[in-house]
Length: 265
Ligand SMILES: C[S@@+](CC[C@H](N)C(=O)[O-])C[C@H]1O[C@@H](n2cnc3c(N)ncnc32)[C@H](O)[C@@H]1O
Image (cartoon, rainbow, N blue to C red; front, side, top):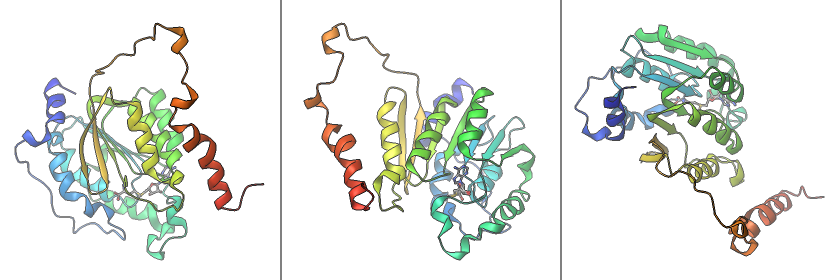
């Protein structure tokens, strides 16, 4: 990515208008969640249009977001896109409405992306994200845009996010879907806890670009705070009383959750 692109990624609103491919009528989607986000994507993705951009999408379903990116930001001959999906649906789809039609999900994805002119720039990894992302990382892959929308189970979101973060270029975008989704009764399963935990770990090299309809857009910036070593060994350890999580989280909360579910022994 060029320095120019790096700068634009941090100032998306400064971009001039770009030409979109708004006609989505040739695609067939049973669940077009992407429509909720399309307007925000049109604005926030504008800096990348026509640039040499490497995209990673983790969780594609029927290809609604995939086709939008292929149609709108992939025209540069050097651009590429990797999609990771099991095409088995997430945990929340297994008992969901019949219209998820998981048996034909992969076929529907291919039928949709096949209609895109830039489809030859797409590589699909049909496997679990935890495996595909580790392989990409071992291959030293680097991406400018990463869209995280696969498993919605918090620990999976956290795992996907950490691996993706290490593959995101400075100036690149990380987009989290379903930041406000709480499809599980137990908060420990919902994406929000993972996203918050991650954001707490990287304020030194992350800037929030925007919160849109349930999505968080972040960009990676050069590290602003280097770790400094505490010179006083007496202060190396948290005081138990100063730890706000001590009673709230790692002692009481898990037990309370098990008790509520009638699972404690
Ligand atoms: C919410 S959908 C993605 C929607 C899509 N990004 C869109 O905007 O239309 C989640 C997708 O992630 C996939 N998925 C769920 N858990 C996964 C995992 N652990 N590894 C890979 N893919 C997974 C599912 O098969 C499903 O297609």
